[in-house]
Length: 447
Image (cartoon, rainbow, N blue to C red):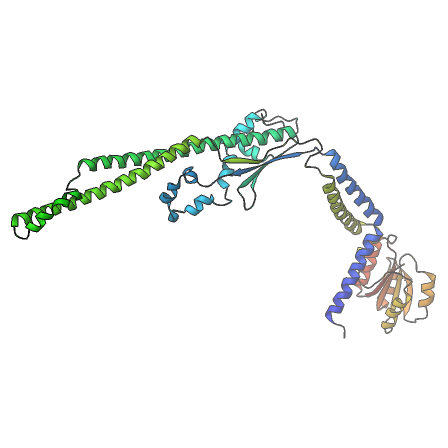
C-alpha cells in the first residue's frame, strides 16, 4: 500500500528534478548573469565614494542630579533610602537617555553645525533650492551620519560620525564632545548654585530661630539645686520652705526644657553649617563636567575607510548574483518561445532512451488505445521497440481536423517533445486539444 508520505516524496523529487534540469539547461544564462552581478558589486568597491567613520567613547559620571551626594556625607541622610537614593546613586544604571538628549539638542548641535560650516547644498550638485547655502537644521544633521549609542551595561556613550570627508567627520565628533562638555559644565554649575542657595536659606532660618530662643530662655539651671539640700530638709517642718522648694523645682524643669530646645537647634545649625561648607566646596568644583574621554577621536588614514568593503561586496555579489540568476531563469522559462522544463506537466520521462520506463507505461495502459504524438520526430530505435505493442500508434503533431479526429479515437496520449526545439505555442495548443477532448496524457518523453 502506497502511503500519502510516499506520494508526497515522489512529487517532491519530480519537482526538484525538474528544477535542476531547468537551471542546468540555462547554465550559460546563469553563468552570465551571476558573473555580471558579481563583477558589478566588486567594481562598486572601487567606484563608490569612500566613507570614513570617526568615533569616540565617553564615560559619563551620572551619579545623580546634584553634585552633593558624591562628596557630602550628610546629603545621604537628608535624602534617605525611601526617597529613591539607590536609583540616584546609580544614575539609573545605564539609563543615559537624558545625556543623549543633551548631545542631540540644538544647544549642542547648532554650534557643531556652525563650527563646521555645514550647509544645505544643491540637489545632485546642480539644482538649487530655497535652503541652498543656509545652515543645516538640527533634525537634518541628525539624519546625516551621526550615531550616539550607549554600550550595554555601562555608563559609556559612543559617538560616531560617517562622512565622505574624514577630516570633517573628525572635526564634527571633536566639536560635539567639546560643546557637550561645556553645556554639562554649565548645568553642573547651576545645580551647585541651587544646592548652595537651599542650604543657605535653611541655615539662616535655623540660626535666626536659635538667636530668638536664646533671648527667651527661662527657668533655673540645674546647678541651682546643688546647694538646696538644707531647704529640702527644712521643708518637712516649714510650709514656707516647702513652697520655696516647689517653686525652685518648677523653675528647674522649665530651665531644662529650654536647654534641650537650644541644644537641638544648635546641633541642627552645626549640621547645616557643615553641609553648607560642602556645598561651597562643590560650587568651586563645578567647573568639572564629570565626563571622561575614554577613546579620543582619531584622524584616520586614507585606507582606513569603513565603506565600501571589498569582502562585503564580494558576499553581496555572490548573494545577489545567485538571486538574479534564478530570477533570470524563471523569467526565461516562462517567456521562452521554445519548450522549457517549467512548461512540462507531471509524469516526465527525461530520456527517450529509458525504454523500460516507457514500456511500463504502455503495459499498464494495455487496455487502452494509446496515441504517440511526435513534435520533432521520434528516434528510430524507440519506434522499433514500441511497435511490438498493438495498443499504440504513432502520429505527427498538427493542428488539423485529421489530427483532432485521430486524438478523439484514442484513449490516452504520449507526447514526444524536445526541450529548446519544440515550439512552446504549438506544444500548448496540442495539450489544449487533448484537454478539450478529455484525453489523458500518460507521459511526456524528452527526445
